[in-house]
Length: 242
Image 1 (cartoon, rainbow, N blue to C red):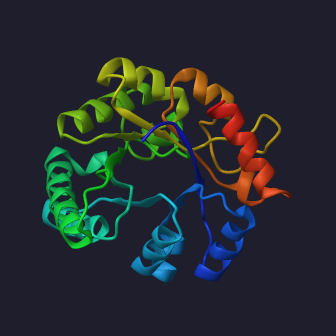
Image 2 (image 1 turned 45 degrees about the horizontal axis):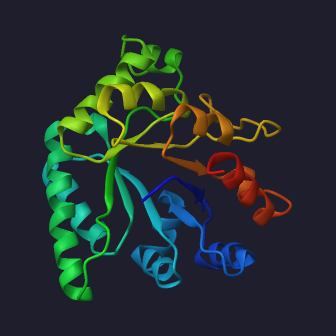
């Protein structure tokens, strides 16, 4: 996988999602399914999007005991998802178990399909982009500076054998410096220069995310709520990919 723009399909139903994606005609953008859509429609939503030719990031942020995390990854890996994720706060042991479960599912998926495709990426959330340093320190009682916490979680993720992290674009450059250029950074909280921040706190434009080294950007409302969603997507691609 190379640099790409991932559209956050934060819709509540399959019909709403398909109606949105049909506006793109022959284009097949990379899409993200979050909790709202997955919980509403279930695994069949992933299968439907894969059948339509989309790459899919299933963003469920698994955070549980190691055995449960591994079991969840066996299910998600069996759907043909391209990216799945966990919370780095679930500990190294949980991340290692999740990786083992995903690899098992990948082998079964390849055997069932009769071919070997790209392995799904397993990434970990460091800190949500809606969390700022004040909330982290006063509500979560994590007293270290935010940047130090994110880097620590990223290194722990790398040491667990995962492919990368979800992080703010503001942290992508430091994470690449600490964990290597091949360690993937997936960055939400992307807004156009003329967009509202909404509930995000640590945000960047697509062009800034490109400059600082993000590998993938996740864009929701600036595309899904745009008057012309295809033009907004193409603008995002121009600014981020070139």
